[in-house]
Amino acid sequence: MTRRDPRTTRRLVVDWTRCDGHGLCALLVPEHIRLDEWGFPVVDGDPVLPAERRHAHRAVAACPALALRLGETGRR
Image 1: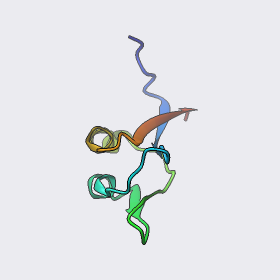
Image 2: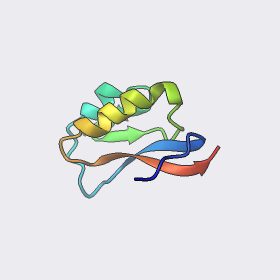
Image 3: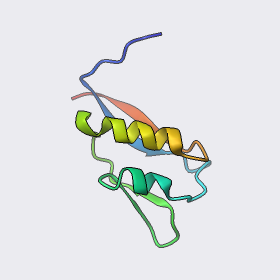
């Protein structure tokens, strides 16, 4: 198992081939995700701050379609 670099920027990413528009992610991380008029998530694309990561991980784990992930985008 490799350790993640804490300086790595992470963003929430939706896999659109899996997303069914349940909307749970928007309830768990409303600071980064809102729902469009059809109930599908709109992710703001901003980095997830270290203080927000616990909630982001919870949203990823709770996604019923396994469509949400916390992606790494390189160093800050």
